[in-house]
Length: 428
Image (cartoon, rainbow, N blue to C red; front, side, top):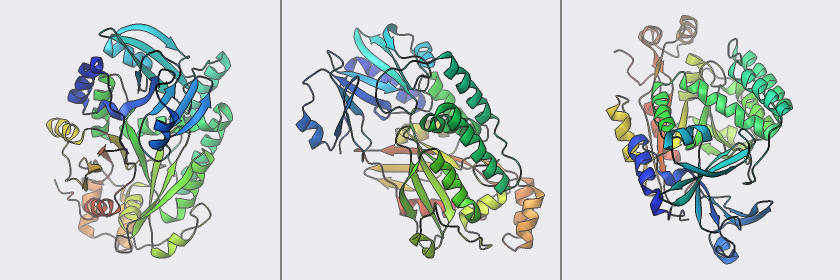
């Protein structure tokens, strides 16, 4: 499935700057194309595997199974690319182009600004859990509720036992849904999660600042990865289900690897989650939303990480954020800035992936002692984990081609073994 080419020569200079400075391919953040009436025949859309939706702002063509921009027909006189950004104010401030129009209130769900680039129109848009491209309005009451919800999410209590953290996260999610509605609550929840993750991962914070400098923020995020103990896995998935996520596919790396994941997706916000857990072949037969996984002390990579740091929904935060880049350029930028890359664990014609070297997080003596007594780690490892640290979080650099949206099971299994805390050197 081919992606649409940008077809906007006047935009090439900005695209080249974004690529050179941040490693992001501009095509990865094209949200949709505005096309004149009659310029995108139904036959073309259907041949591309897209489906039409009749909205208040035109016919919007969308592909449910590939990473391609939407096409909005009937709302413009000339083909116009619309790139996705996190903040219109940031985009306008950094590009300094002449603003010729705009629609939608800030934080309304969908808002856009039109700018002139060498005499040609280009649009940037912020999309917050809204699938259509219709500009929105925001009332004073909603702004108050939004501010309250953001405060709740930013200050969510991540301390206590894993079970207490899960219960508190559910309470905060429920309250956020009451304030904003389910779809917008999901969008705001993961915006706060990315902020927390960056507070614990220097490579991600460095990359985010580059992307803010070119005005796009995390518009290129691909998926968010959470790790959970077996006993808390069902609670984690039920939390995400409350926020409107559906189970897209199971991911199992095989009995030898000892781990798997539930991939979840949110249709309105387009957030994708990779929920990792230690897993056996027997676990595959049930619905993880209804199945309690029995605890085990035979910790594989995921279980050990959670035992060392806590579950991702708690103090640990996400194991990694994966975002879409030009792989070679982003890797170069990371290396030059002192953030070493691990070898690629996927190198296919349609997908390439690699982690930055892990952040080392020190482990509490209580957690290390419990694992030592259970003979999960050695005395030397216990000393190293508490003094120097164990592998924590990563940033993942990814590049997709031809609209491919899947994952590489063999490659992911290989990299998880390479990042197991027991195999990563901790003596500096």
